[in-house]
Image 1 (cartoon, rainbow, N blue to C red):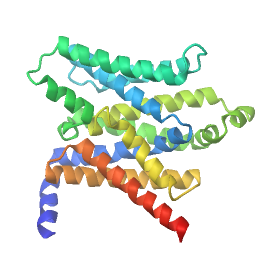
Image 2: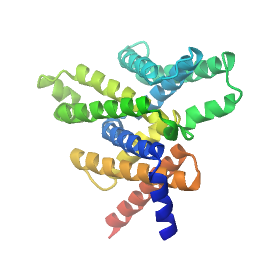
Image 3: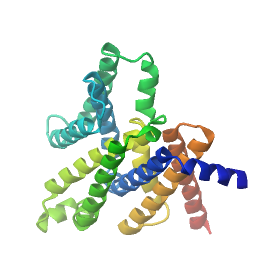
Image 4: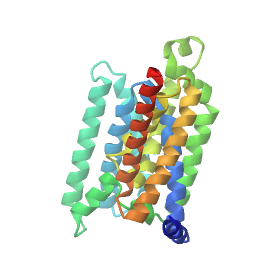
Length: 282
């Protein structure tokens, strides 16, 4: 145990490790805030769809030789989030069909572009790192860290400032409209925030595992708590704890960061699920 603690202290001295942990905690915090709303509204699939859009956007940035691709990916993903929300309200193309079209199309186009315009000798490694996160969280530049911190603060402050409005449209959108709340505006705001969270989370868990980062903490918290505020707070604690645990294990054991964090989230959900079953019985 002492040897393990000394190893953690040793790694903490490296700036890239400290940057990774700070950004990872902020990303997990932002993901958990939106997760409760998305799960209750049954919009969990939107996160999955937009994550594939972000993969396609990263491929476009790579083709254009843009080194700092986060702003480009952010703009494209936010635009598609708005487009998805508008299309989902269309009577011709339903919401789930629109997500499926955008998701599969972006994933296919992104992989196609990476193949056609590839400048890397290890295409499979690049694709795997983008899809599953790999160790990209440990290679963040100072600009990317600053950008991630600013976006995370914007997401947290937006959620706190508009908490009552988000709460209202989450549980009863029709009643919220009747009381004068502009539900369409706040739905749009939620979609934009989700897009921002997804762009942030790609460096941590990769585009294919982002949904797990959003959904699992919320579902775990719902096993124990019932009020919106309690579930949200518990979800934040679970998400941050699993992110820290996953990153520490990943750094010490050399396992993929994203997969390790998601595995920690899954184990936590299993523990909360078992606890709920036993608490109901006894």
